Image (cartoon, rainbow, N blue to C red; front, side, top):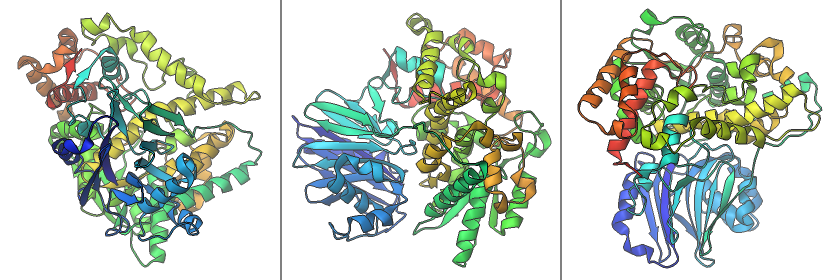
Length: 604
């Protein structure tokens, strides 16, 4: 993958800001450590840092052809099909997908995105038409932020790069405060938290011209009648999953997979191992664990058993070159600040920092990794899909903590924000946006809403985490279950099929039953592993106490008395589903303080 950035103005000379662009580029070097490039024109500056994966020599960027110049971050999984389709109009001088994306735009204009199967964020400057085209992939795997000054558009893959431009304010207002304290680590789609900063939404594209910014939606989940038997549906799912994984193994650099011993990563690893075996190669798999977890792990409703025995089962079953990465609790706490640097925002506490440390180790074994994210959102694997009371709750099922969260808002913002209305309105807008059919049963109606809620919120949070934590070490992580064809199809599969045998992701298990040993195939869902060592709570408590005692920036935004109460461990409210409990809530406020200080954020 790569990092992209740039600026366009129709009344100022963009060539005069070279030093600024160098700073923006430097902020993206972790995303693209292999190559860097820049094209400066009077009205447009295009900036790129590259992680070379395919056609290492020929895929340099920015890439130009005639009047068009592109900067592109992503991977196109139907490159060869499009190349053949374009062959009658163009000669190709590289094997890179970048050249295919650029020439697709030249031939089809903005509708080129309808033909892409991949993950991407891109910008194309048309020198003759004097306009910039921006686009983001359907699911939202790759990020793209922008700031419109009124006379200039500034864009970047990540917020830290955008904030290097002096015209982008290092400020938050009431909306930013609401996002940080009422929604985080989730984020309203399209909102960049920083005042005036926006994000191109997943499945959106458009132009910046002298008339301003005009973006539109080119893709969404659409409802249609599915007339297939369960057996036909299972076969269809199997074909889609196999095709997606196989397409995403294409690379000119080493490929490996995450392996947790759960259903999703095990399926991807199984298919990948079989494909590499055909080439006479052995798959490398990697898993993460935490020092002392065997000592402190306690079975719960959300995590009934730990991963190691299932990981060992899969590694032996597949014959992979397996590596188990063990993280230390103190290192998890120390990496909280790096995770803020990587995400550009406070995030999922040690769930972020553990992924960052894990990806740092994975990079030693490969440049590309495949991961099992998003199967739960698409196939209905989470508890809130399956528990009748939870799924009918009128609100975000993973975050019923608005009253608790609102206590932390400082007085100035608490007076401006109606916390309950802010959160509920966001929930209702998303649920109402879900496309339904007139004949949908009440259950199917609600399940479409649940899928849309997960797509626009929970899944985006996890995709943000996976992209930023992996790219911080120059690791490209691909997510086969995010193939838009899978998402489109599963949106219309009846819940009774998805819930086959009364099991979470029962349809996926049945469809892929020939690819896994029984022990793993029917294992109860287990979330991303985290440390159970009580030392983590001790460390973050001590660190937050130090922040309060030393006069950190945190109390400008957050009520000190509530932080003091938090440090007394009086409340045990889930901040964000089962992933963020008391230790993670304390760690989140550490990250929030780090963010305010690292990026010198002012409150307005």
